[in-house]
Image (tube, rainbow, N blue to C red; front, side):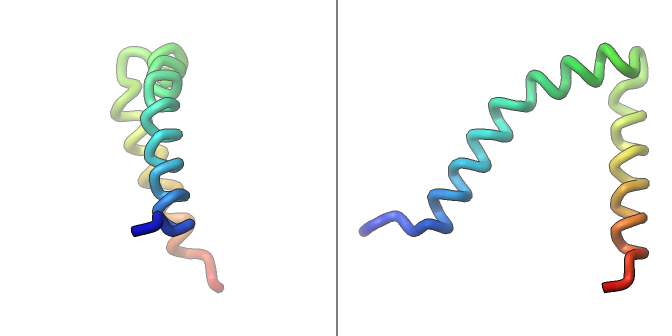
Length: 56
């Protein structure tokens, strides 16, 4: 069976995420040592909260 465009895009996004993960982690560790993980979690939670508060 042929692969759909949806499946192609999904696979591409998975590959992109796996390729960027080491780079992003390295840069976060440089920017926010030693609590880079906690700082990232807080920042993402703030961004999600702001997104939820936006009226569409």
